[in-house]
Picture (cartoon, rainbow, N blue to C red):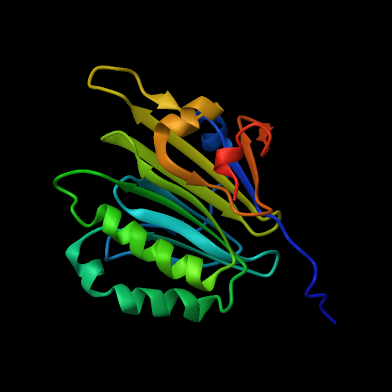
Length: 207
């Protein structure tokens, strides 16, 4: 008999490029319409989330599903169908993570798409962690998820200007520079470069 009072937490770990590249990856999720944009599996990953919206929904240690949606007009028209598909594969998810979007003139649906997913997720899922709106034009995020330990591993990098080297999210300061809005769901644990960031360190990030 299941104990519904048990509260699970997800680990959200930001790592540098070297650490990210060392992790064995299985089950790729892409954003092109010719590849899977939604995938239910025990492990999955997606890369190059820039203006797109990526992330996943989880029933910890039971079921997980990842996604990566291009912010194009096809997906704008198909949004209701996309939402139905997401909640068809993993019913009644307990936790979720959303990452992505960017304010660019040539990507007019980017922020709107993220906001639409955020609205649906926060209405249907109790615990949603958000890494919203890359601040810089040249910024991107990759993620890996493992159901075995309920862990999201993310690598984010950003370039403040042309001909300037990329910064990697290896500190709390860099995380805040990379994203305009960060919200860590109740119970989720945030780690940056192997150091846990607690509510005492950054109360504004935690719900």
